[in-house]
Amino acid sequence: MLLKQMKNGLSLRKIHTWMIVIAVILSCIMVFSTYRVMRSFIHLTNVTEEQMVLENAAHELLNASDYLTERAQRFTITGDPRFMEEYFAEAFENRRREKAVDIMKKDPDAAAPLEALREAMSYSIILMNREYYAMRLVIDAKGYTQYPTLLRSVSLRQNDAALSPAEKMKLATQIVMDDEYYKEKDRIRQGIRKSVAAIETLTHNVKEAALSDFRVDLSFGRTMIVLQILLIFFVVWLTSFLGISPILRAVEQIKADSPIPEVGANEFRYLAQAYNKMYSVYKSSIEHLNFKASHDELTGAYNRAGYELLLSGMDIRSTYMLLFDVDHFKTINDTYGHETGDKILIKLVKVLKSHFRSDDYICRIGGDEFVVFMVHSDEMQRSLIESKISRINNELANPTDGLPPVSISAGIAHGIQTEDAAKLFEKCDLALYESKKRGRHTYTFYRKSGDNEMLRVSSNPE
Image (cartoon, rainbow, N blue to C red; front, side, top):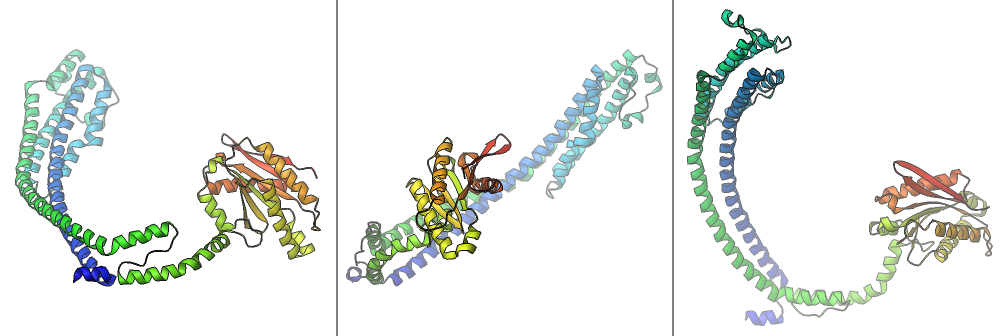
C-alpha cells in the first residue's frame, strides 16, 4: 500500500510534518546529551583549575620568599645597592607573597590551606626582620646615605655599631646565612607543603566525584550518538526516497536551463508544472531585466548600481580609474536646453566607447559625471591615456552632428596607489578637482611618493 502511494506521489505536507517531528527529537537528544557531557566536563575542569590556582599561589609565596633571600644575601656579600632596591621592589611593589594569600582567601573552601599559607607567611616576615638588620649593617659599613626609609628605623646594637666596616659586612652575611636563618626558611617550606597537601586533600574527593559523573555522562552521550546516527540514516533514506531524488533531478534540469520533469510528490508535480509555465516567460524577460537593473537608461552606460557591482568584483591593483565630467555642463543645459544636454551625454558615451577597449567599463555615476575602468592595465599607461583623452576632447570640440562643442576634464589614478576602492575614487576626485581649478579641458594624474601626495597635471591644447 505504502509503495503504491509512493509511486503515485505522496503528500509533501505529511513528509514535512514527520521530518519536523524527527528533527525536533534529534535536536532535543543532541542538546540534552551535549549539555550533560559539557556540564560534567566543565565541572571537572573547574575543579582542576581551582586546584592549580591554589597550588600556584602556595608556590608563588615560596618563590617570592626565596627571591627576597637571594637579594638580601647578594647585598650583604657584594654591598651593591641594586640588590637592596630589587629586594624592596619585590616586598612592597610586586608583593607576590601577599597576592598569593589574597588569591587563596577568595576560595571559601580553602580555610585549611589558607591557614598553612599564613603560617608560612609569618615565618617569611620573621626572616625579613633579620634581613633588615643585615642590610642596615651593610649600609653603615659602606656609608650609604640613600636607602629606604624603613631601614632608617632599624637600630644597630651597641656592640655591632662599634664594629669595623669589614666586620659589619661579615656579620651581615652570617645573619642571612647561619643555621637559624635556614631553620626559618625550612619552616616556610613546611608551611607551603602543608598548604599544598591540604589543597590536594580538599580537591581529591571533589575531583573523583566529578570524574565519575563525567564518565557516566560520556557513556550516555555515546549512547545518544549511536541512537542519533540510526535516526539520521532513517531520515536520509526517507527523504531521499520520497523527495530528494526528484528535487535533485529537477535541480540538474534547472542548471541545464531546461524545463523540469513533472514527477515526484503531488505538491512537487504541481510546482513543476507552474515552473515550466513560467520558464518560457522568464527566458524572454531575464536579459531585459538584467540590463535595465545595471545600466543607465539614457546613455546605455553602467549606472550607479552597475558601478558598485563592478567595483566589488574588480582587481583594483591592476586597474586605472578615470573620473570625467563635462566642462560647464550646467551652462550648456541653461543655454541649449536639457534635451541638448542629454544628447551630449549620449554622444559622450559613444565617443568613450569608441576610444576605449571593449574590456573596459564605462559608468555614469551621476549627472554629467562618468567613470571609466581600464582593467588589466599597469601603471605605465600614462601616455596612452593622455592620447585617448586628447582624441576624445578633439572629437567633442569639433562636432559634425549639429551639437555644440564641449570638452571634458578628468582625474586619473591607478589602483596600485591604494587597495581601498573608496579611497581610489577619492584620489580621482582630488585629481579632477585640480583639473577644474586649472581651467578645465585638462586631465590630472594622481601620484603618491612615500608619505607625500603629488598631482601631475597635463593640459590639452585649446
